[in-house]
Picture 1 (cartoon, helix red, strand yellow):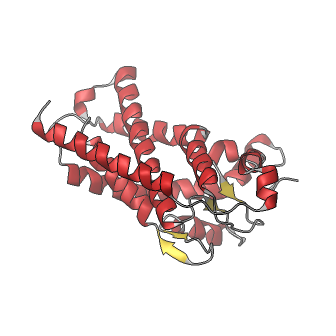
Picture 2 (cartoon, helix red, strand yellow):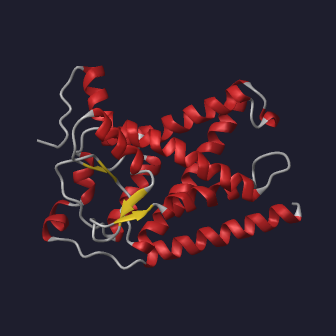
Length: 242
């Protein structure tokens, strides 16, 4: 293995290990009696469209700090148990396929599968770094549906939430540093397996810029997901469980 690749692998491993330790050692937020009795998992499963967009906060629900156990549950659901996470990576892999990048991977289903695996692997790393950073800083990791009404007001909220989140007070806004740092770090790490002569810093910068664009779009879909599902299925998808 070339020296550059070995160095990047070592840096990536150390970075992930450090973030994992921060995530694991974060002091848990005490659970309320209601949370202990019901548990976040049950509440998440009952949320309309949770299967599509992952854990979120309904517009009528208050924001409450997450415990460490809840953060782990949110991470697992956002990363592995949400249909939208796979669909988004399938779309981005399709864009890469249409552009023919990286060209070394060729075309056809084999090339598409490789591109999808690369995109999904980068997404997993992004979420791991983001979740560790959010846990260390006490930041909110879920998307909260807008408490407003109207297409433009909700769209503005969805885009803005890609760039800010809430701290442990669940009221004060903070810049989404863990999100973009996670995207940047995952972009750098992806240069280990991407073919050709790569610049880890350049790949990290492109990944962060991609987060600005893709993240805003994903938030927009999350904001209107229930409305879209209601139109498509002609069924009632309430914003909160009955």
